[in-house]
Amino acid sequence: EEESRNLRHGESLYNMVGRLGGDSSLSANGKKYAEALYEFIENREMIDGEKEFDRKQNDSTWSLNSKVEALRVFTSTLKRTLETAEKFEEDPEKYEISHIKFLNEIYAGAFEDMTYEEIKLKHPDEYLARQEQKLQYRYPGAGGESYLDVIERLRPVIIELERMRVDALVVTHQVVMRTLLAYFTGIPLCDVPKVKVPLHTLYCLQPKPYGADLHRYAYDP
Ligand code: F6P
Image 1 (cartoon, helix red, strand yellow):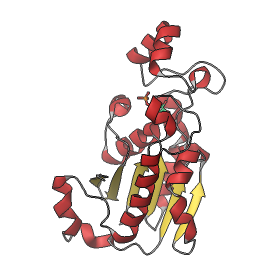
Image 2 (tube, rainbow, N blue to C red):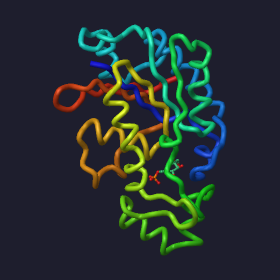
Image 3 (cartoon, protein in one colour):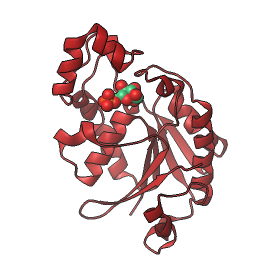
Image 4 (tube, rainbow, N blue to C red):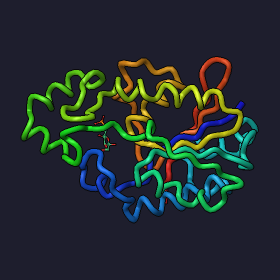
């Protein structure tokens, strides 16, 4: 079965200062991660897996698709994902890249570019409303989205991923990652906003008749 490898973009300048959304570039750390990611996908050795996953890199179930021959690469249309996947652009024969707006991060409407502290201070009611109903809460202002909105727009992407006959690499954002992981590993809808998806971590999903095998690789420079 085909594998899908999913990750958040490398650390962005906004991640460093805790600002939501926006379209900032990668930080110096984020750029290092992007390079290590490319080497890892090419050679499977530059990123140290977490201890328990280390051994699995060499076991037989895992080495099924170990050498990458061709990969469909998907990014969002935001700079931090384009920059994370930049290296893959150099080999279009091997890596076919598509930039998909549906993979963009949740749009925080009027609260884009703010920090959680600013929202809490200036809009305490909104802050509280989101705490209480994170899944349903829709950000105010034009284009503001809720988790449910993002989950809805991801439907066609998930159908495409399931239908594909080659491996895919998906470079995306926190809310989208939570949704994809939840969908492929059977986490219930109500828990989607709570799924932990740290930066600089690659998730490899191998679909099985029921559910999927999941391997997690954390970048440890
Ligand atoms: O902080 C990074 C980020 O991707 C923001 O752009 C986005 O609003 C947020 O994470 C989503 O996480 P949460 O739903 O937990 O606020």
